[in-house]
Amino acid sequence: MNLVEVQDLKKSFKRHFWSEKKTVLKGINFNIPSGVITGFLGANGAGKTTTMKCLLNLIFQDSGNIIYFGKSEFSSEVKKKIGFLPEHPYFYSYLTGKEFLLFYGELSRTLSKKALIDRTESLLKRVDLYHAKDIALRNYSKGMLQKIGFAQALIHEPDLLILDEPMSGLDPDGRHYLSELIKESAREGHSVFLSSHLLHDTELLCENLVILKDGTVFYEGSTKDILNTLSTQYKISYLEENFQKIIFEKDQLQMQSRLKELVAKNCIIEKVEKDRVTLEEYFVKNVLEKRKNEVHLDHR
Amino acid sequence: MKSIWIIAKNTYREIIRDRIIYALIVFAIVMVGGALALGQLSFTEQARISANFGMAAIHLSSVIIAVFVGSTLVAKEIDKQTILSILSKPLSRTQFLMGKSFGLILIIASLILGLSLILVFVFWGLGVPITSSFLVAILGILIESLILMGLALMFSSFSSSFMVVSLTIGVFLIGHWVENLNFLSKKSSSVIFILFAKASVYGFPNLERFNWRDSILYGESVPIDEVLLTTTYGLGWWLAFLVITSLIFRNKNFA
Ligand SMILES: Nc1ncnc2c1ncn2[C@@H]1O[C@H](COP(=O)(O)OP(=O)(O)OP(=O)(O)O)[C@@H](O)[C@H]1O
Ligand SMILES: [Mg+2]
Image 1 (cartoon, each protein chain N blue to C red):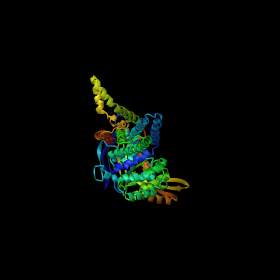
Image 2 (cartoon, rainbow over the protein chains, first blue to last red; image 1 turned 90 degrees about the horizontal axis):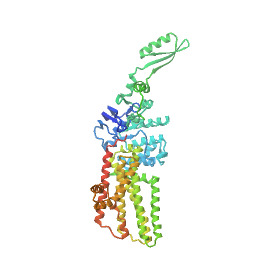
Image 3 (cartoon, helix red, strand yellow; image 1 turned 60 degrees about the horizontal axis):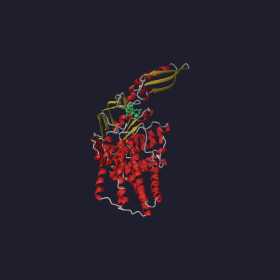
Image 4 (cartoon, helix red, strand yellow; image 1 turned 45 degrees about the vertical axis):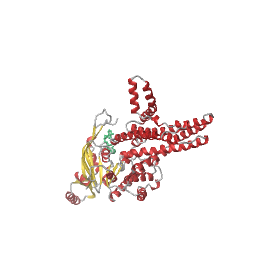
């Protein structure tokens, strides 16, 4: 089942009223399926944030439809089922972590007062900020803000989490912690739609991918499939008369016969491994390649 | 309705925790205190001067808060991008606007209440009788602040902070002056001036109508139907500003 269906979404921006229109989304189509973590990828400026903001009606598309839980209206009922973490975690700096969660939880109007207090406590513990619950957000570090932002998105038990670069700007430890949190909430039944530039984390985290390129959807489907599109080969490392050698074989059968041959020649087999293509390599080759020679004069 | 109240409560908390508000409150208290000191200077008109000065202090400080806090009330949320997460919660943009407005109204009302209490003590000490016209004068100040806040909020939905404050102060000055303009136009023979004056009278809120402060001095009471009519007039302006703001806000892109 699809939680959200995006149909032919178009959006262009004008930087100044005299400058030319710049089309960011040229009619994109994709679905956010239920029960999985979907990664949303694309180069800088590809339109990921723009798409997410359209999903949340923070900006309005020029044309195209978005269907939420089978309905075309972005009503309060729909909002109650969605949790959102914006790209830059700027929140009310004058509130403490606990006040902030209580405020947003109360606003979400899905929990009773008692349930909300319990939920706030347990979320604070879960994102490891219980010790900082009475500290004002202005004194939080970037990592702490990202975590409280994540808790804020989860406060009302939404069906769908929309996270815009939840792990950007965090140290490896923080990234690991947050990706564990995301996995945990996915296991609990929250579907997740997250954008990221961290392809290694994305590969481990996301079963499903939507990739934007040049204002259209370049790929939509499972992460496994995309990695299998480039042929995987076997890499055999061996010693022949004390010389280190490497040979590649296309499939298992050829690898087996090559091994027999090498053993017969008295070579010493050191290592046989499947040479996997990573999402990172795939991305650099297929998604980013065209941009290498482009010069961007947008950001004056 | 509940969402509006939740936002209002938080806005109240936001303003209370902002240090700038305390500078204003201290300023206001010093002015009200000054009313007492000034009164001491001239024995003949002690009561008159104290009342005049004290009321002016309350008027000025609530107007200043309405304009300055009103101009940043929502603009700050857009600037700091806090609006992105709050608007993705189940509340409409209009509810958000109303919540922010009510939060500030609560602040202004508390301020007026606090300062009035101080003034009541001052009056009491000086032996100035406290009559219903005192309450009416306070109501007038509250409604004028409401209009100016609505105006600042409206301007802030399409221009920068500095412009908002300038424009709102501009309307404040014109608003207090339109009555004179109207008076002058009756004596004038210039058609252009009369047209200009008429346009101003209808195009700007006549803020002098809410000035019931003098009636305290003269010990007269304002007729109840005038109070009701003027209150309705004031709320009408505020509502008009709120509707316009809401219409602009509804289609805004928070990119
Ligand atoms: N308000 C705006 N006015 C003009 N152009 C805009 C505006 N908002 C976004 N853009 C442009 O739209 C394009 C897409 O921006 P967007 O933020 O959606 O990209 P992104 O995929 O999220 O990038 P990143 O990975 O850097 O976060 C960019 O080229 C950006 O310059
Ligand atoms: Mg982005």
